[in-house]
Length: 226
DNA sequence: GCGACAG
DNA sequence: ATCTTGTCGC
Image (cartoon, rainbow, N blue to C red; front, top):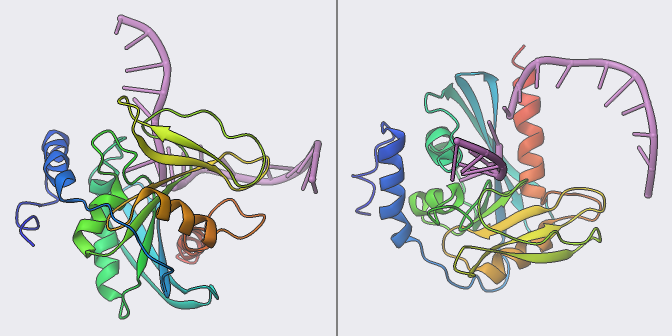
């Protein structure tokens, strides 16, 4: 596409913000009919402050059988700044992505999608790069307002922006645990992102399988480095 | 100036 | 995210 040339990772926080404002208009929100045949979960751990470990786990749907797992370890220079997560984790994710031999039908990221200050969370941003449907599933809220969904599994509330528009959902997947925040990334819409995340979250689990397994692998691989 | 603030 | 053991509860 034409946005790749202007998108270098060697940018300052100020430039990163301007880049997000341009890229957000390229995001496409549309229905995702039916179900994916395969879904990928992405997560990163940090063996050292300046070293990251990205893991991508591809699962078959609806069996949840693991089809492929790839990982990439490398230096991470961009700091963690709320709203600019893609500039810290995106580069390593893309390197791992190249190692995948079978591209999944859908990718779930650990972070926001539409529910972002500039409507371009890491799920939306990476979706533009890989040109596949993506969803953002975060363990806490970054932007927007919502009421706490009651402590009953499967309860949902809308997350809205200052204009009152729905930008995501607070989903209580597990009783007694904080809700997760779901928002569409690219090539999918609000209702289908919520529908599919619910479909991929097993009873008793707070996170959907792709994300949950990616997190387990990222932590286990980090330990096995010793 | 005072909070909020993905991982 | 990371530093960290045991412990309370379903």
